[in-house]
Amino acid sequence: MKNVWYRHIYISIGLIFSATLLYAVENPECTRINSEPELLQVYNHALKNGNISSVMWALREDLKQAKEKRILMNVSLNLCDIKVAGSRTLFCQTNKGIKRINMPQLSGRLIAGSPGEFLLKNKDPRELKTTNRWLQLIVEENYNRPAESKITLRDKKDFVDATEYFKEYLIKKGLKITLTKIPASQLQATQNELIPDKINQMWWALELGPCNKYYEGIKAPIFVSQDNYVLDGHHRWAAIVSSAFGRMNVDQVMMDVFQINETIGDEKAGLVKLANEFANDFGIAAESGS
Image (cartoon, rainbow, N blue to C red; front, top):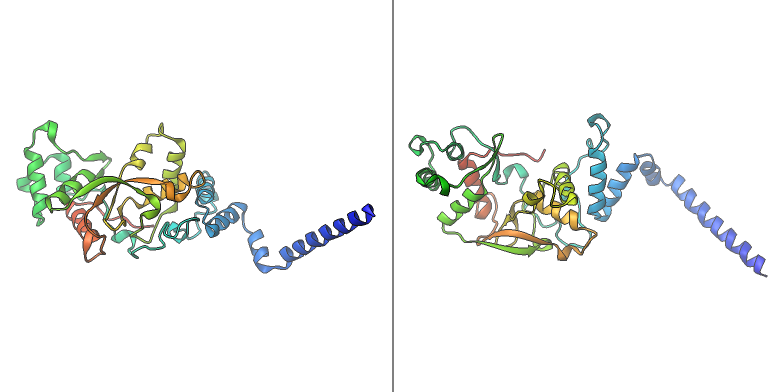
């Protein structure tokens, strides 16, 4: 009797295996997927299921390869397309539809003759030509300050970070900035583009821990609006969420932020318009999503 049952079990298993194999062979979608490189299969499956840590792993493996051997390099990637598992908003499910090139850049390359260059090189403000009276005032004030109290631009080969000047600019315009913590899952993207390689490099620095030279900079506070939209720091926000994914619930990931008492608005109003005016007049070149 026992042998009869065993035979039934073996036959059932065999039939299930055969049916599964037959489905995989005959199903066109399975045929297409199985013909793809394994790394691309992992990436696409993780993307579909919102497993951001597996997406980061696949991108990291791809980045290790020589340029001509990269698999994911020629795939149209925008991490705004991913819906992070366990969240109704991450990353860009409720974004404002603004392209990255139209978002304010608070760090980047300085344009010659701009207020930013005057501040960087401590040039005489009487030679500055700008119609922005607030920036004119900031340049003049900083020029006349004692050396030990000047606000300095963090500079690396013409790439500067204007965060401190942006804060001073906002205060002069009558806005309030609060340093606080907000759950990452409560923040919302303003732009509709996230560059995978940029996020992946930050993610890897976070994985390496505090000894990595970029770790503290990535963890530094980002700017957000009073309605919890990210103004500047989208890629750092995405990297921090990606690093924590799998270790804790996405609702438990906390972000250090500078929260400004103004709504995000759009390119014609609110914080986006204000920050773009600052960045353009300060002299930071726009950066595209490509």
